[in-house]
Length: 454
Image (cartoon, rainbow, N blue to C red; front, side, top):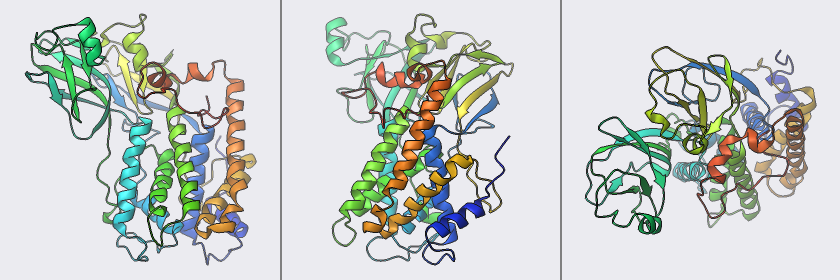
């Protein structure tokens, strides 16, 4: 049964009274609503609070699904650049405008847009939380090098689909390995077995051996987002809704480190710390807790497990369409089903950490318990105080720390009632621990008790 109190307007009035501004002189009512909504989203991702079940049907012969765009999704990506643009305007004491810039000469609309776009793409790169499945034709390149879309930031998985319809999983290697184990690969065309990104130009991959037949690359990649245009009606940011605040703090850090009047080293340092906290949360958080295929419970695995575990079929994409029996997860949004579904629609039921149902209308009920409301209000006050800077903002730091502390306690509660350890539950972490993508592959924990509620 959902909570029945308080309403959004009640919480706004409590926050306004806490700020000693009950008539909304220094903080407008819409501004306080934005801070409450951000507080709820931050709480949700820190404490893995709002769990729910989403259901969708499969499409024939389609193994990959983006959970953010399937019918009935509970984790759609909906936050726009315009909403962050306006939140930043409030934080910087600039007039909040839906279109043109009317603020001071310290900043301009292009400054904010550039900061948002750069931090959004950096967030996607550092976290790999949003993955994209796509295909591209290879042709017969003389050197075996294939150019990819300029939107590709990182290649997470690659398979080769030849003209006969046969899939081959390609292993990620480097040229030293190829020289050691497959001498002559660069001048003796043959069936493609591996790929490298070590010596290629940007946005290109090296296939090995050089392909003897043309085919199609089946890719799972991290892609940059679309161009932002916050003053032109708003563009969907393309990151998980409950992590959009991370991009905001990163953009604010860039804006407050500009030379001249905008420079504010104290608040810039705070913003960078919040950015780093959010990046690590995104890398630690799992979307799926439990999964059911046609009503039968299955244990979610990672893409790595599906491709490499002996208990699963090697080159599983060669399996003919049938009734899916395995579900694999990549990032926070992409799943794969093995075998690929046949023409009969199959039901996929997922218990997920869903987007927080943020209240919008005055009468909407805030979906947290009474035991959390005071901490949510504390953190909303902390966000509202950012534009005061100095000692006034510093005095609210314990309010932020209280919410982090309560989120850690909530995570400990989730662990106490679960029969699985965090690492076993959060299979998507295998993408970091089993496949090295930086010098130290494991995520840096935000805190020893905070791992996305698992």
